[in-house]
Image (cartoon, rainbow, N blue to C red):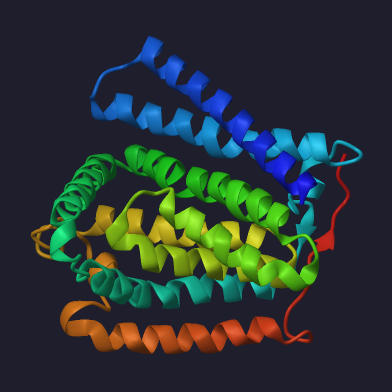
Length: 292
């Protein structure tokens, strides 16, 4: 227990220092509220807060100073597992939209009305910023958006949460269920979006279990990337006749509202597909590759 506590303190300490450095760099070099400046802020924060701290910690904690080994990035699985992971994530999108819709319908008690208004304003501000980031007039900007909003956060967040926090909390194998759910809770909470908390936590738990079952961090990274990339691409290719009045593409709404039944089917299908990972003869534990 003491070792876990020290590792968490080390991780948080390194994360805090690098986050401050990232903020200082942004303030000195940009510091404005333009879209380009804010994109640089997100880039630097993602690197400083989520990407570098796990790598540095893994280098310290691995006996041979091989961070890829400690983070399970030196492990690969059969290509069919990667395909199955992508299929599961694509099938899960309508179900996630349904859960987002249900989560958004939560009404807090009257005594918490002021808090509810604050949470709603935060959601609106986050949605407005996301909309600014998603705007892309050409293919080059689209590639930047995919890198900034899909690839980088998928790798960095999985390194931090599944690769680092979940592994620290897991300890012995019998306790990995608690580690998966605690990590998923923190993963969702740190995004500070109450009306997307439940679906994000469940998605985080799915990533956590798949990491445990496959033994390779690349599988949840691929799933995380797929989820984010679909949102970016769907918005880019949506025109005014497809995009809704609240600037959401069909990928963000299918499975909710009048199409709730698609969301229900999605959750059932995903649950069945996830069961495949629980069969030893149908899943592949991560095989180590040689790293230096």
